[in-house]
Each structure stands twice: as C-alpha cells, then as structure tokens.
Length: 417
Image (cartoon, rainbow, N blue to C red; front, side, top):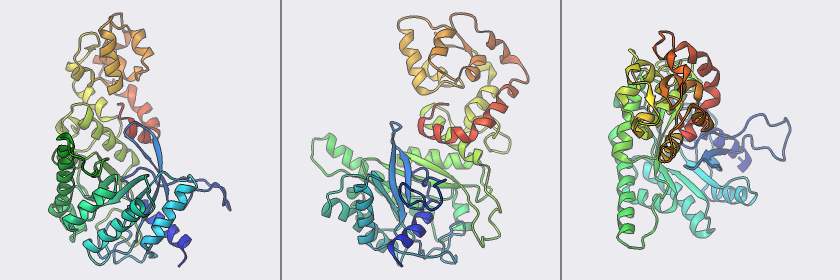
C-alpha cells in the first residue's frame, strides 16, 4: 500500500480523537489537487490565547488488539487497515511542514503487540523529528496506558503535549464496553505525567537547567452518549481529573455510530448541542467558580439543551439577582449570564475610576440582551423589570437554539459565557 493510501485511511481514523479540535475541512471542489486539505489529515487546533494552528493529525496504525465496542478500529471491526512506518510519519511531517501546510503533529495509534511496543513506536517518531531533523514545531503524542514509566518519561521529553484518553466517564461504562481498559491504569498514566511535570517545574524554580517535559501539559477525551451516563457524572469525572491530575483540557466527543455496532450501543448520535453544553459547563467549572452540583440542576442529571448552563443557573436562582455592576464582587459578576471573564476584568478596572452606566456596558460588547435582566447600573435599566417574569426563559430559548451550532467552536476556545 502506498503512503497516500495509508494517509487516507489513517487520517480518517484519527478524526474520532477530539483531543485537538476539528479534523480538516470539507467542501473541496471535486477533482482538486492543488489547495485541497480534505483527506490529508490536516486539523485545526487552538492555543490558550486563541490562535488557530494547523496540525497533521494521524494514527500510526488503526490496527488494535483491544475490542472496545464504541471504536471503529476495534479488533473485531472489518474496517480497512493500514500502518505507517516510523520513517513514513517523519517524512510526511517534514514534507507537510516545509510546504507550510502544518505547524505540528498530532500522533496517536491503536494498540499493537503491547502498550510498551506501541509507546516505543510513537516515541521513535518524536525522537527522530527532534534529534535527526531538528524539528521545532508542536508535537502532541498519545500516551498509552500500561506503558512503562520510562517510556512515558521519554515521550514528555520529545512532545509538547501528552494525552491519555479516559474514553468513558465511569468504571462501569468501561467494564461494559471496553473491559480491557481499566480506569486505575488510565489514571495511573495521567499521574505519571503529572508527577514529572511537577518535578520539572520544581527543579526549574530551584534554578536547575533541566530538559522540558510536556510544556503544554496533558489532556484527555471522554465519549458522550455511548452509554446512559448523565452529564452530572461526566462533569464529576472531569472535575476530579482537573483537580487531581492537573489536566489542561478535557475534550468531549459525541458518540458516532459505527458499522456493525454492538447492540448495547445507541443507533444514533446524541444531539450536537449536548456536546456544546458540556464544553460550556466545563468552562464554568474551571474559570467561573461554579461547582458541578450548581451547573447540573435538571431532575434527570443532564444539562438543559434549551439554554446554556450559566443562564439555566441564573433562571433557577433569581433571588441572587439583580447584580449591581458598580458594587458586586468579581465572583458575583462571573455569575451574570452574558458576561465573560475578560469583561468582568474590564468592569473591575473601569470601576476604579468611575461608575458604569448601561451605555458603558453596551460599549464593552457583553451579550446585553442576555445579561440585561440580571443587572443594575448607575442609570435606569428598563430590562431589569423582566427578572420576575414567569416566562423569562422564553426570551432566550429561540435565540440559543439558533446559535448553538455556531457557538460550539467559539465557546470551546474563548469560554465567554
């Protein structure tokens, strides 16, 4: 099989890993050769400051000794198989980089032979790029649970970011659909990465010149909708991982039905808006001071699909409002729908010099129609009178439904809710 055929198979297989955002463009003109990125494995990821970067996103191989029922690459699947050699991945990365198609590499793999052997192969790619070709671009490596600690240590030396996919949110889910994967083993791999990152930071702080270790941290992915586990449990798992393992990101990936799927799996994907709501809730937990029990308040332990979780909390706690923007604390301002972390900081800075009016808030470009019923300013805010209306929710539902697909990418990057 030639490299181009392998690339078509292994780039397509990599699209199910959400750990670095989208998986290439669509809509390339039929028959195009020049300027086409469809099928090449080019994906677009985002840095913490919002910059979009292009990565070559591929699997080393889609062969796998595991039989995870939700995975199209499971051993019992009849999907076409391919495998790159280490040299082929290195050559592709250099060629794509020299043509200015990409700024880095995202490399994952099915488990072949053993976790140690697979991790050795992934490390060999990163080592060759760094040492043989002096490649200074971004590298994201998938860490294989069960691999020896020395191999994980080597991966962190070559890669900018490591990720260990937990895949399903609870041990019961794993036991049902992926019995070969054990949560303690997955978390153990995460802990190994965390310990080495902490060790690197401590030695650098002490003044020692030590090699960098995974400077962009680590991330993970959870599949949403493959089991009946509600959003409450998904977010509890995410919150625990953030606190205990110091993850940079948890990515949520809506389950995608696969051919010849197990009867225990759903026949269709969950609504895309559910994935979007989980990202919004995730930002509330990390940057807005919310607790999981506050974010998920529905009787069925799932997030509302009609309104975003911050607005849902505000509608359920109207006694907390209206908030006076000229007197409220940072924590109180962060609870107001439509005001993000950046605008809260701006409001606090302006307040040092003068009191804010409705016109000032509009100039800040907050989501005024969403925020207005919950705010008081120096002058009269006529929309605040709607706070006690029983049907206040209906003022937001239609707009939220229209924006849900557009906002999914935006909110996952900026977190402004």
